[in-house]
Amino acid sequence: MQKLLLFLVALSGLVLSVAPNEACASAYDANPKLVVILVIDQFRGDYLDRYRGDFKTEDGFNLFLKKGAYFPQCYYEYANTETAPGHSSIATGAYSNGHNIANNQWWDLSRTTTHMVSSVEDPDYPLVGASADAQLGASPRNELASTIGDEVVLGTREAKLFGVSLKDRAAILTSGHASTGAFWIDHDTGKFESSTYWGAQLPEWVNKFNSSGRIEQARKEAGVAEGSFYDKVGDKPAAVSYELDFVKALVEAEELGKHNVTDVLTVSISSTDILGHEVGPDAPEQRAMIDATDVYLDGFFRWLDQHVDGGLANVWVAMTGDHGVAPSPPMAAVEGMPAAAFSAKEMVDEVNKQLNARLAPAKTLTFVLPAALPFVQLDGSAFAQVGIKEAEAEALVAKLLPGALDATQQDLLKETPNPRGLRPATIRRVYTKTQLAASDVPATEEGKRMLHSYTTNGGWWVIVSFGMYQMSGNANGGTTHFSPYSYDRHVPLGFFGTPFVPGTYLEHAEPVDIAATFAALLGVNRPSACVGRVVTEAIKAGDGGSVRPHP
Ligand SMILES: [Zn+2]
Image 1 (cartoon, helix red, strand yellow):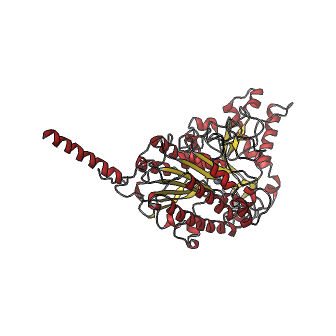
Image 2 (cartoon, protein in one colour):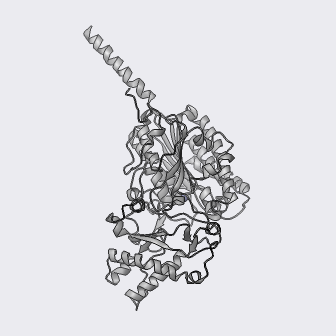
């Protein structure tokens, strides 16, 4: 009898301990069935409020604005606001000093002297399904931190993790190392491709999609019969619809959201960035792109509702951008801002000229390599020839850069200033790698952001902060992003899903908070270098909010 009682007590304990867990979110119980991380490339934080009145759909951006938790005050807290580090920061919840991806490309003279290596370049894993002339391989090997998707896979050993974008870096770095697959397009053909990191062949459903006529349909919709798919179709709304159709094919073929554990899908919409660089954030074409994206996202999320077990009620989504963008220099100048469009190439050439005159007058050495701003890289072997070590070399380049920039702008400096015209660019401050490695920076917000931009990639370098609204190129329109200023760091952040209390939250948030929040809610480890914050203010009590009753 006593034994029976003990057994019953134990059994009831078992039942009690199981039931509440089932009610709690957990990756291990497939609650939710699917986590989606949606990145919109070059999606500045003011767009959603600026064009809010345009959004007529229910489940496009309104999924976050009306049905989700929306954080309009979301800023990257680093200085290198580029695509690869942006996606890596979202995925890993870390900054460049954590995941080591500080730029889209950099010189690695130990690997090759012919070109800058891309953030995902890896010759050990050749591309699969690429055009014949595309020889370079790709993998996540340069990303030195785990992603939230990686942690869900490591925790469950069963989760499916996929990444999709038109861009290789945005598909690979956002999904991570333990992904089942990552897909991006061949620039010429528009066909989705991958690398041998994920398999010797493309999955059959990818081949089927590529030969389905969908590429031709996108070209027709974009009104572009010939030329690079990426450049000519990629900057049209038709490419957003094309990309999302591929994602649907993936969800269907890989049965995402139908497994016993939580699956993770990362999607990065590239077209906003391809167009944005051409026309700038204030052009009517970019507004039309964002409005079209709203409609396509609405269609996608409605479709997802039908194709995941339990519908959207079983899906969590985080939406953000990988960086903001500056207004195009002519537009900013007309409004009276001290905008500038200098030439980084001329600036670097001038520094090399001055360094040669000073250090090696009989030779023509390349001390400073072509720049990928905000970084300017040095060739250590050239400085070694004249007996100068890293700290001294970087300090010397930092000192010479402002004067070199001035030397390239003599005509503009002589002109009578026009308050509504482009002005000479200025360098506010240069930080050296040696300085950042020693955390030798002012105890300011800018100092912190520079420390977050630190990377061991790229040999010797300095990081340059130019004046506001200033960039290399784009004197006649178009624009870019790369600076530590608010307009380049500002992106929206939205969460949708059962744990979140719908509303607009004016608290400071950062894209690194996505990985921290999802890790907490899913009950998995944070990514290896994660520094993000769990947005407890937006989480329901009982789902991991600041007040969580014990089961
Ligand atoms: Zn980008």
